[in-house]
Image (cartoon, rainbow, N blue to C red; front, side, top):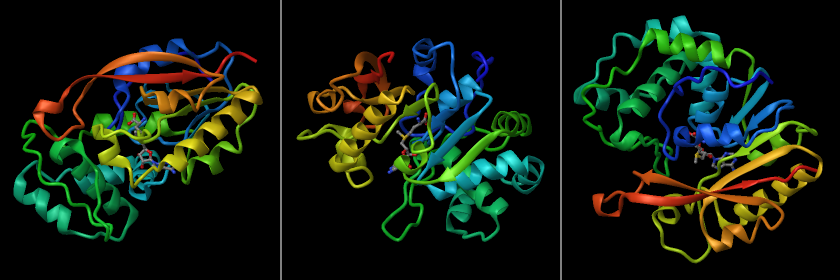
Length: 271
Ligand SMILES: C[S@@+](CC[C@H](N)C(=O)[O-])C[C@H]1O[C@@H](n2cnc3c(N)ncnc32)[C@H](O)[C@@H]1O
């Protein structure tokens, strides 16, 4: 893995994105690093900042992984298909209504909606339909050719998979780096994260993740897990160091609930 690259903006702004953490995350990494795994990659903010030479990015969101593949493999075709789309309410709802069938058109639709939706949220209803309203971010330019080409270069050697986290990390070996950034759920709490993500990632999934994180740490991989700062979560990582970080939350829907919230990073110890 290369040393810290110059850092770059992610392809998309993703709910729960970790741009604010990239400096501290980098400081937690060892000098000697093998393959970089990000199994809940979302916007993959850390990957884009770090620009590792060998990486595996994965997520259960098929549209997201399709968009990364198209940006990696066909950036010029993507831009050609996307550049006609303007930022505006009417176009937004037209794109939202459409159901394109080619990979390139699907990536255009996904990236357009992610940039311009309310709070940059990607959310589908039970029928799998994207249902977030227009966000009125009128100054955003949905597609910039230079940005797409830059992201394409960074993604050039990345393996991209639609998968549950544990299937992917079964390939990791000693000295690999695994950064887990799951949806946040905690036990017995009514903070905003539970309401937002409970169906996507259950408490059983959190326990499954902690077991996998410990297995990887035991085999000598460097493992970092981001999660909510909550005793129920800390109890899942008794052999990891806990680093508490503060962030400004924009996840809660009402302005009153926004503010500084604490998160934890669980960092495996050197074997
Ligand atoms: C908090 S977001 C990751 C944010 C990301 N680190 C960033 O900087 O943008 C969590 C991601 O986990 C994905 N996800 C949910 N359940 C999953 C599972 N079982 N396995 C893999 N990915 C999953 C979601 O689709 C979502 O993209």
